[in-house]
Length: 305
Image 1 (cartoon, one colour):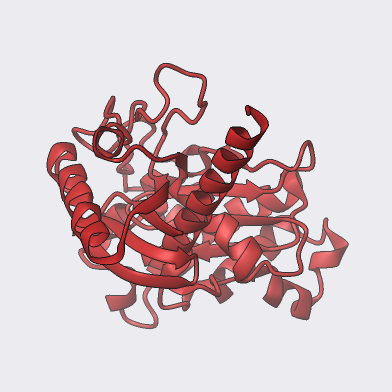
Image 2 (cartoon, one colour):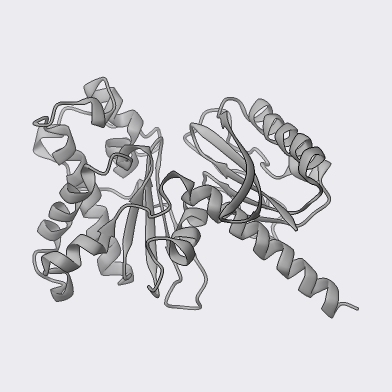
């Protein structure tokens, strides 16, 4: 069976067709513009790919949020109020449903990446994992929860953090909260203060230490709230991996020895890491969702006979 996957982010949508999460036959990257244009380009890619490779059996979609994820809701697949201009209220599944009569599984983009990293990447062998993406926005997901084994979604990017004194004059760029994590440590906030991406700044610039301080607070909060076995930091801001050591140092500072297991340097080095699947974590997770949707559809069809 062939599967379609979409990783929908604030700056780009990645679409792929594959036989599995790690066997991609064809993919394309589409710039995120207005909703109508972006989603139409996605449908166009899958229509053409299906003509080349054969019929698709299911779709998996990992999309930026917040988004309605409850399948029993009338608004399933519809974006809730979001900082992304022009996307609030958009039904991201409707264009696919209109063209393809196949099962569709939906999650947030970081949830799809978390699933892929747990099963196929940095979390293999772990019982739990948190994935944080730092890019156009900041989001996080924890898989599985201690409650019932299902993934937990949280708007981690919008929690408040302690201000770095060196950063006192920056108002923050989140239209909802100004100086939440996303408002202070996302890609747009970095460019708003310093005029470039973080990897373009000099090695002795204060920016990496300020940004890592905010992300270290998030990492400490995740460790204290969820007791996960690993935290993976991905996304465009983290892509060159120079921030990861600073985030480890900042988390250790904020924990201040409170979690004994994380006091050991070797444990800390593996506890906060980059995604093993790199930039492919999100699309791999979307294809895993598609496989799950197809499997559940087969089981439902069989049991209803």
